[in-house]
Image 1: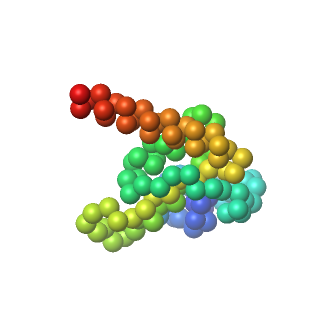
Image 2: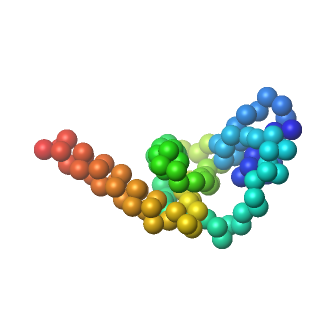
Length: 119
């Protein structure tokens, strides 16, 4: 049985990604291998209305060895016009300083590239 490691919901065979949080599903036996974490272990480091932006940051942080988790408040069951749903990026408490430096560097580079394009 496939289970979402974030939501803990079980899904029928054939489903590979959680439709609620876009997390890859794992086998129920795999889920037991993960240590039980509390929400106190995670810190919010970034928010956006753009899921793709947050997902790109997540992938970059994870490639730098920083564990991350995304909480999307977007309801995929009822699409609405506009981007009114907040997407949050969390990192473990032990990685907050490193993650914030990384994010600030990315934001600064984006601003610099935007300024040079406008010149």
